[in-house]
Image (cartoon, rainbow, N blue to C red):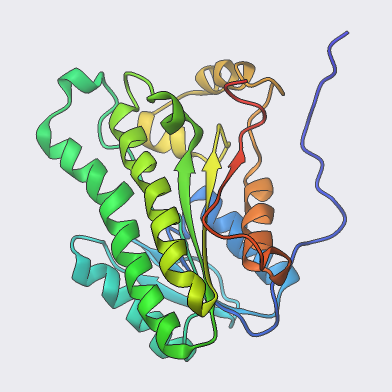
Length: 259
């Protein structure tokens, strides 16, 4: 007999410490919206909600809306600096901005799309993390940096996601190197290695339909995709003091994918 497994939201909400100043890039995506909502629901904090093409929707006074397309290192630094200036500092950075610019086989991928994938998934997270870490070093109050990876990066990706997986494997190196640099000042750097999360990413970047999503979910041992709130809860935990002895780690959230 096969058990049908569905997501059931617990009756408690993870939270961070009062007064935390948290910048989230890519806050307008499915994961970003879930993370902002969970922080607003359970925490008394200030949130920088960044979007590349439009401002984050929401009227809560705890949200600082930031809009900028990342084209260069200067753009990344400007967003970090703007948030730190408006919030009076920065205690945490969560990098959720990312994407895939070509849906075909990597052998047919134009060089321009390769460069875009490397820029958005590896270069920009580095620039953002470096700028945030500089602020955190200066504040001398510690901090948290969360980057995002993909489980497929450990297995070479697929014919369609190979470049994305390469960039995300580089992100894993970023997490380790930045964690080593940040440790003396209690700046903890971690990442979440996502499997199949039903955040809208595949529909947005690959134009996947409901049938495609159902087939992908069936490949997961738990026979479902992850809920964005499950991802948000893990990220909130990693920003809380309960995770104060975790750094340099990629934490998998996969439903058992690749077992």
